[in-house]
Length: 336
Image (tube, rainbow, N blue to C red):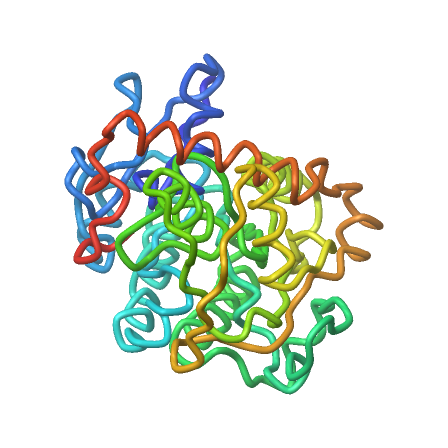
């Protein structure tokens, strides 16, 4: 018998990529849900059952989870650092999505539930310096996560844990570290650093500009995970027998300045940097420690940052050169 899979947030970046894995698999019946109108979904598939509705409402979660076996929850209001620092209440409201999906999973006897968490849950005291040691899963406690978005993710992780303990629902949780790649936001205020910097350098080259704006001093460090590696890690954790929380990220930590240099090489175009010290910068340094997931599940990334940026740069450049409707990837007033 076919398994029925629900992907929530399927109109967004990671959810759209995951849905594309299942869309032609005859072993699964695919259901996709997102709050955005369907014309603004990053990817949409005609052979799936597609819902455009607000999953913060319990009645809607009951509707989309009916007869579903597996739920993947990517639905949340989020974006890059500029967005999450200036929209804390909106980010916190995503807790309603996870809570009502969990309630509906029990009501509709769903078999397994996946929640996409974030490296923003980690204790800020461990992220005060550049090129810090990779964050281990235990570093989330004692709790001091990113205000707003990070607290919502940490609370929702615990909701999954307690629904598993109290109701027997099998849950899986991963903490993503800066996922990037094609078919994602690259303009409009919600984009993350890799896409934003690719876009800036593409436009600088196209318009013969010699300078780009950079948020902060460029010395803040992060690790970035290419989308294909993210999807593989997601499915490996989901299909495993482990209910632990796992990092799904890269251990290749770079400064923003180093990433700019990589993109300059890809573009074959050099720019000066106008450092904007008044812009949101987030923590000083953050990277993933993958020892737990490597030991228990055997997953690790296959793409270097340079390889992933090369593919991402080409895709964004193709969108800009081809005159793609950027609104599809940048609607700032629509929850992803």
